[in-house]
Length: 75
View 1 (cartoon, rainbow, N blue to C red):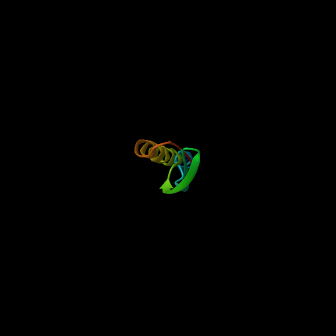
View 2 (cartoon, rainbow, N blue to C red):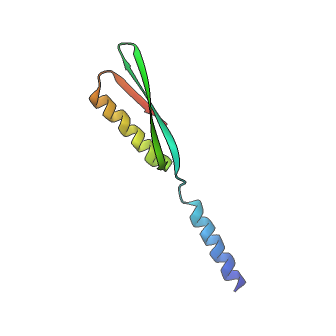
View 3 (cartoon, rainbow, N blue to C red):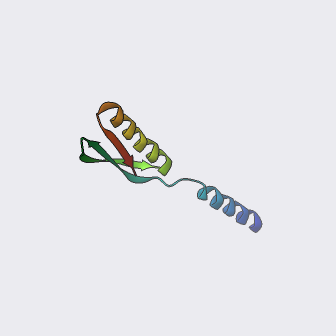
């Protein structure tokens, strides 16, 4: 009985270690047009790092499609 509890506890610990923590991230985007630089930030709340990175890349893609000049974004 005691062994079963230990194995169950270890299994739960292993499963918990594979879950991603959700945090709040800030995506910082810089747009440069004719040597004028503008920086903007976007809050990404309650996301895993991978999801926040994807959303930040989407901000960059949207800005580059919508505005002249070049925009780069990073977490």
